Image 1 (spheres, rainbow, N blue to C red):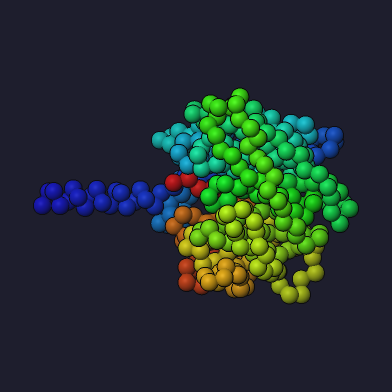
Image 2 (cartoon, rainbow, N blue to C red):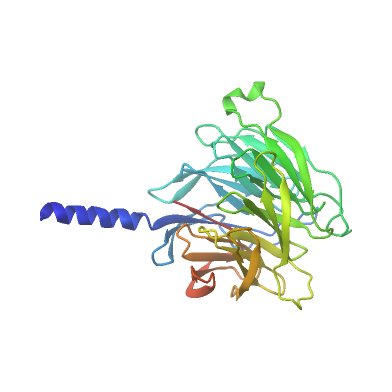
Amino acid sequence: MRTLICLIFLFSALAGSSQSFYLFAGTYTNMGSNTPAPPKDSTGSKGIYVYRWDAATGHATLLSHTEGVVNPSYLAVAADGHHLYACTDTRTMNAGSISAFAFDRPTGQLHLTNKQPSGGDNPVYVSLHSSGHWAVIANYTGGSLSAYPILPDGSLLPYRQNIQHTGHSVDTLRQAKPHVHSVLFSPDQRYIYAQDLGTDKIVIYRWKDEDAAQLPKMPSLLQAAGSVVTVPGSGPRHLTFHPNGKYAYLVEEMGGSVDVYRYHPENGNLDSLQRIATHVADAKGPFSSADLHVSPDGRFLYVSNRGSENTLTIFSVDPATGTLHTVGYQSVFGKEPRNFTLDPSGQFLLVANQVSNNIVIFRVDRKTGLLHATGETLDVPSPSCLKIMP
């Protein structure tokens, strides 16, 4: 009987632990300035906020926050569960950087390891190679991307390669020059995709992964492999892949649409399958769509819309073709949903509302894809990125 009780207790503990994660919220500590003008006032944020996330209840408990980190606007968590990387000093002219942090899991504390210059103004996105050896960032205002070796202790070496985009597109105000808004590895890690809002292109690079120890002997990591031209004035922003690895989805910031592509792993090409609006039929614009994610089970895709809408658009995914069908729209109960995430269980969706200074938590109906507010809201100054670590 005692053995049975012990086994039950052990099973319960393991089951409980499988529902517990860490939630990281990147923020803007001040809104900065992309011009020589003085920076705007502080937002009151401390930097990166760390929470214990309970996927059984949808409740988050604050554990810690950083101090003295300027504008950690976008985050990436390492697969080892012990390191985190952030775009830092964003919206600060001539000061963009990427920072590495060591994460102490027992205490929930982040400790700055080191940081390196970003190679261009206003870094806004960071992606990690699955090998754990490399980080790549997108410099929005600088119109470039940079690739960094990661050492075994999680620290960053100076960038190994920086690629400057050139060109422009039809909007003379917002697309007068390149603006690389995101960089993303393909599911097989063989290619990287740079979404350039300023030139209306997805630029495709072939990736050559090497150990950082071989740095002096390495050829170029990133080699041009083609591009996808989007609708003029659409403003490509973020890209994501379906869990099955067959399809890719692009959100257009300025076009207010999602583009659906078939992914070809043999050459990295993306073939266009569909373009579908993220807004209601009579919406006038201007549009400001921001982020997109596929549910863990691959059945639904969600897109955030800022500006006058402040909504999430819900799409169902056709399992045979990867194409989308509009299911509905959900208010985010806040302003400027810059970023959001689905928890690994697929039961909850969390939205970072940058202007209203809150993170709103929704429960996901896994049959319909619809969202229902839980009443749980986290008060966070100027949240801009949410990441969950197992």
